[in-house]
Amino acid sequence: MGEIASLNLPWRTVPGIKPSAIAIADAENRIIGEFESAAQARYIAERCNAGADAAPVAKGQFVGERADMKAKTPVPVPGEQPRIALPQVTLCMIETREHALAALAVWECITRIEFGDVLIFTDKRAFFHGIPGARFVEVPDWPEKIGWSRCCWQELAPHLHTSHVLCIQWDSWVIDQGMWSNDWLAFDYIGAPWWYKDGMNVGNGGFSLRSAALMRHLRKHRDRYPCTSALDDDLLCRGYRPRLMDEGFVWAPQETAFDFAFECVRPDPARRHFGFHACFNFGLVLEPEPLAGRAAIMARSKYITKTGHMWNNFVQANPEFKQLTAAAAAS
Image (spheres, rainbow, N blue to C red):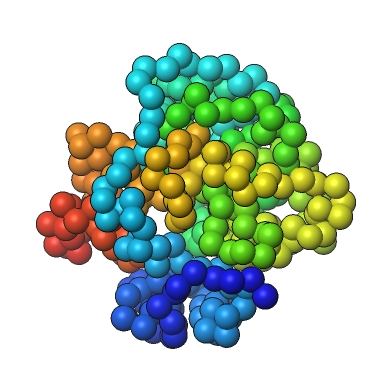
């Protein structure tokens, strides 16, 4: 059984903010996350309360505990760096809710890196106008996040023309291209490390480098590797990982993954990272003006504010934007 960081247990299920949703709250009544399925919420709460190593853990638990958050220690990034070329890597964005924020994230990446390809799955391509060389795949606005997960697992592979794909979301992007290593192309999966100590700690899918071989394998064998959870990175990297490793797929070691990215866990505030994930980290990677701009967009988003934990975690990490909460509640 893997050791898990302090989670402020016990967790319990409570009515969600969204109609018909079910949420998980911790011992201090903080909302951990919302789920469309009551069964899934109960399962996660029970697994965490029992100390099970496979239990997915909500990210907000770690915001208030991190020393770099309390000290507002920005991620160190050297001054002006040259743009680098990664012809072996496709940049991929799948987004049907936060189009404006997603477009900003794509621009952050392509200003630092010349990718071999740029692939955008969306229902509103106009938001991504002007992105050079982007190829678009039209998708519906899925009613639940598992639709996004299944698109990534099952629809991405046929469109890949490079050996690897960098998967990003509206709250993740490249921050330090100087950290790139071609050695990473030897791995099938790299994502920011989690908090587990059982050897399956890599990693987060919101900013992840995946091999085209792995993505094609998941699509071809979706009967053996079905995407059954919106927490698809946990399913892939903890649930299916042992079998996939037996079939020859390779995950990056934890130390390499920390060079690649950070999300919930950042042990060394002086450490550089290639990228990051999660909006509660925005204050560590953005200057005040672009941070305020993103906060304003987030406050107007029903998806972000009504989901609860995303906006709450952002404000917890960036209390200077707490005054926007009232506006968010009225939106």
